[in-house]
Image 1 (cartoon, helix red, strand yellow):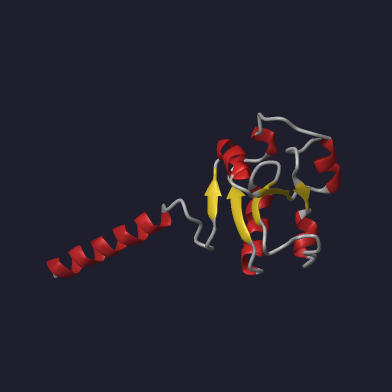
Image 2: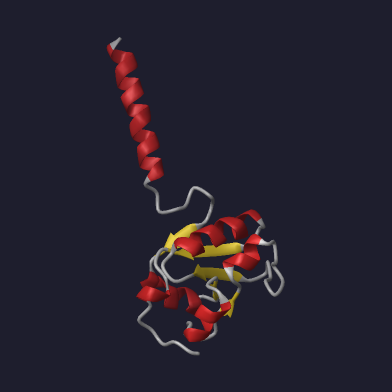
Length: 125
């Protein structure tokens, strides 16, 4: 009986450690806001999934706007599967939903845990 218990506890520990991984279970990585600038230097395009009016109030220079509402409506126009995207929103909630959608559709993406509310770099309007 004791061997079974040890095996059971070991399996629970393995599953718990797997759940704590920095890679998202959906198959994409989530980074912190302070890593965005480096990823841009590495060739990633910032994909801002806030609504058009939010984007117009200020966004990361060079960012592309594709609101989550459009992605949820299966509108992927102006996106390229040849690009690598950093997905960002205001606080990190919508970007995770957008990342889930884009991952399923076969886009190369990195999600940002925070959002524009935490961005301290330059913005353009």
